[in-house]
Amino acid sequence: MGDSASSVSVSLVEDFYGIKLYSDGSVERGELDFHLPPLSQSYEHVLYKDIVFNHTLGLWARLYLPNSSPSTPTRLPVILYFHGGGFCLFTPQSSVMHRFCVKWAADAGALIVSVHHRLAPEHRLPAAYHDSVSALQWLHSQSKTTGGGERSDPWFDSHADFSKVFLMGESSGGNIAHRLGMWCGRQDWGGDMRIRGLILLCPFFGGEARTAFDTREKQGTSPAFTLEDSDFFWRMALPTGSDRDHHFCNPLAPQTGTLDVWSLGGPLPPTVMVIGGIDILRSKQLEYCELLKKCGEQIIEIVEFEEEDHGFTLMKMDEQSSIKVIEYASNFIKFAA
Image 1 (cartoon, rainbow, N blue to C red):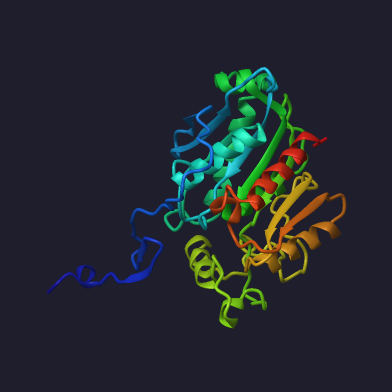
Image 2: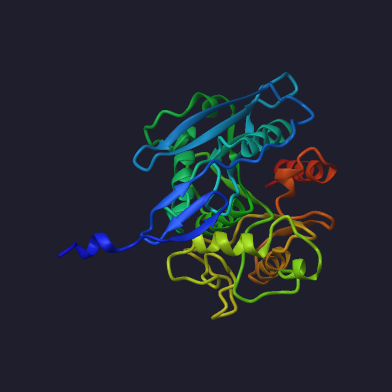
């Protein structure tokens, strides 16, 4: 008599974006990266290096330091950056993410910390959220006056202004930055570190209900990021058995009509929301902004580019819209209280 366990067949459940998910939970990954044309400048003066911040989980970050000059302040604001990719794709080493951070470090005049988080579906949410907390706690440990006994990295020691730390993310990274901002609020971290603001670039939200904007590709307009894309990534990233009204996806908490406050430590820091006017996620992003305004004590600035689609700040970095985003963010950082 044969072993019944050995006769159980394993079937392919999902196959998209180079990710193959099988019925037994195993995953196969292909190589995926976007190979974009070179930037208009080489940015060779931007230094970078990788550093591990959690050896147990294998978490690391890529640091970007614009080379100082007599006109550059000794101390630079710090941007803790979370990349996009639907929680499933890319690392800070991916070429599309690397070029983004090189340009932002140079043009915004900031020390960028680009965080690697665990990827779904091998590590479904809230793994990426937990990793973001780990990254922020490690960043705090790098502050000179925390008294934690941990030796700070020389780049932080010599160049970082921990009184000006900003959380930034693009697409799913914007979702992560939003969650992390909710977790930390405006709490006093002790030592030098202060979270001064959030910069959310086309953040990835969703929900079960469809809007006219969600379904516009059916009306003859083909978006850069489709409903098929969005639904796939949420199937891969959300806890098994959850739908898109899970609060990780839909922060509007449809059961109560209020903002999910995932251990909300206080009001969010001042927030800039960058929206593409033809992004299928636009409706959810605007709903999020409107609800934040109703929560009280929230400062949120909406910057919308009518002709742009999802991810334009990443995919069209040399175009005027993306350049304006960096200029706007630079002013936001400069004048943050």
